[in-house]
Image 1 (cartoon, rainbow, N blue to C red):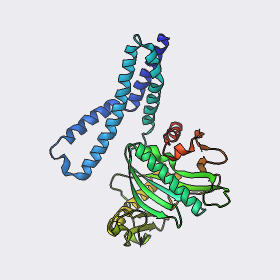
Image 2: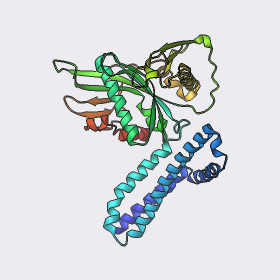
Image 3: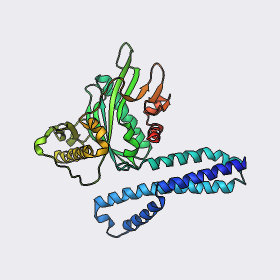
Image 4: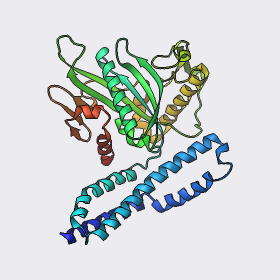
Length: 355
């Protein structure tokens, strides 16, 4: 038994070294030292934007290096303990394997924008009250996921339903590789349940779409003609201060040639909201120009997807049985309430593993 366990630990050690090579851990450690020196300069805090970018890079590097170092130290410790307490070492193998598998995901998140903050848009499908309520349930699910996993978010714009729920909402998500982890959520999400709005308690199917795009953190060389824009102002909805909700401060911009629509109601000032909406528009137009996003052009035009039967990437069934199943990866769980409370990490990882 001891020989088998030590053999397994050595296999884990070799796997970790391979992961470290793919992650360029040595180069990351050197870059971290460079950033540490920059952060300790007396004039570091004078350039606010540059400071923020450097701190975000530092935190991302620190996190992955610490994870790698912790696993490496754990393997070495378990090898030493194998001759002392083999039962304890055996009990730790499953957790060690899980930690290594999670670290492997970092080798997949190597896309150009995977480390970027991202915009998440949620839109209800046809069906009025039912779909609006489902969109608000999805919104809560993602907010709970953000809170549980250390992400921060801003609600950029929101359109409430006439009676309940939301017709559409746009969120800016910030943290550790948010676009990388969330990009697989783009698509149609389907809910099957006994409707709380149906007096006859019939079963209803509702749809909502999710679109995740990266926030491009650089000056975008995108030409926009004023004549190609339709700019509308309207009164903000949802939570906000007195100034937000009682003036026409919200701004919606439509890029007529592509049909792309962006909106913002986060700020109190109409001018600031217009700047944020223009930033999102440039962001989307830039993505449209990139070759690797050609397949998503249709998704980026306006409010977005074919929200109907047969197009869902994930189904959430609450009746006549309970099941959440991703149609792309076949990953599933019967604990619907737990998923809707934000426990979606395994769905995200399952998608990334098959990429």
